[in-house]
Image (cartoon, rainbow, N blue to C red):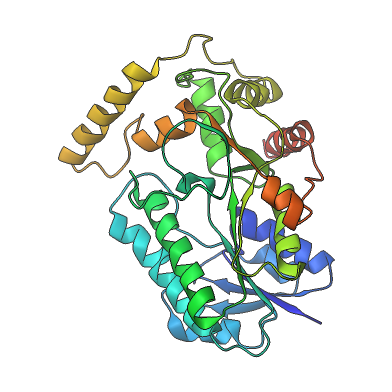
Length: 331
């Protein structure tokens, strides 16, 4: 029975992946931090390795004998020192890849990156031939670019059999961070469209992403490749946000968006003011949030269609319906 090591298995994506691995008959191995809730992993009879991405000994133990590694763990957010993100997203990955070098059993390492690595501008079917910029506006996306470069370096130099996936905005049942915050802000009428509510959102349903991960694990001849991933259909900001609002019965946002020529300097001012005050939490509007909510984020997945045979098994409407149903079930 093949073994799949999952980092971040107690998180949103990693948890879904662990369940899917179990249903496919794979042995699930998980790197888990002390104090983590591992109830769902216990149900899967997962092998638990106690430690984190800074624990080189635990990483070596976790990798030993694994057939597959899927790296889901990351420090996320749009606020805080870049060094804090780098310690986990780059140096933690380095330790994991060091543990993988020369492994006689490893068939494929899948590194989860993000479509956020692309430049903060409007995108219209941007594909993988467009290189990400070297410098970014926040610690998360900055270190996602650095971690991609590091992963590909290990493929070229050490022949680690590695694939990079760049999912868009991930939604689905089990999201206890982004969706609840969005719904709370909708309830309190704190959500405004920026630029145009017709701009693309670059969504991917979590089960579509899990499907793509298995394709990346199993497809021969794709080592060293990078793939954009979305739901494969145009989903506007309006369609997503209004769909969430209608689904849970809260007011839709105002129809009139804040123009970007107003939102951009406002975000810069709010960020600089918060930094001067050494605020622990981000202001209501940051440049990263402006990028997410105010730009047209339309990316091509043609390469994934051709090389991975990626055909998203769920439509956006199906994914959103399942997401909303799960949220309402949680009360």
